[in-house]
Image (cartoon, helix red, strand yellow):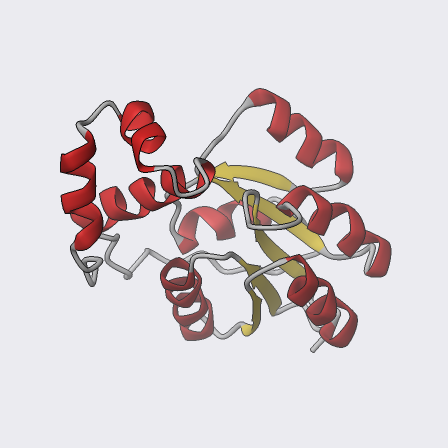
Length: 180
C-alpha cells in the first residue's frame, strides 16, 4: 500500500472518521484507519501510507505523538493534523514535529486534499466536494461530547464551559446523536 494514493485516517470520533473513509475511497485512495495512537503506529508499520490525516486530541496519546513517532517509522509520509481546538502553540508544535499542515475542524475532504496538493511529489486531483457537511445538530452534539470528554465526564464543569444550564446539558446528552 505504499503508493502515492494511500492514506491513513486517525480519529477517535467514529462518525467523522467513517465519513472521511468513504470520501477518500470514493476518490480512489487506498485507506486504512485507526482510532488511537497504538492503532495508528501499527497501521504505519504495516502499510507505510504516503499520507496521514491525524486528529490532534484523542484519548491517551495525542496526535502530536502520532506525528513524532509515525515519522520515525516512515519519514516520507506527509501528515495533516486536524483539530477542533486550534491554537498557535499546537500548530507550531505540529509543524515543528514534521506535520505538513494543520487544519481546524470541521474540514471536508476538499480542504484536506488542498493541504496535501501543495506537495509536488503527491499527484492529487482536487474535485468539487460532493459530501454533504454534518447538520448543525450533529456538529453541536459532537462539540458537546468533546467538551464533556475534556471535563472527564463532569456534567457541571461541562455546562459551565459551554455556558448552558446543567439540566439543559443533561437533556441534550440523553438524546441520541443526530444521523447527519
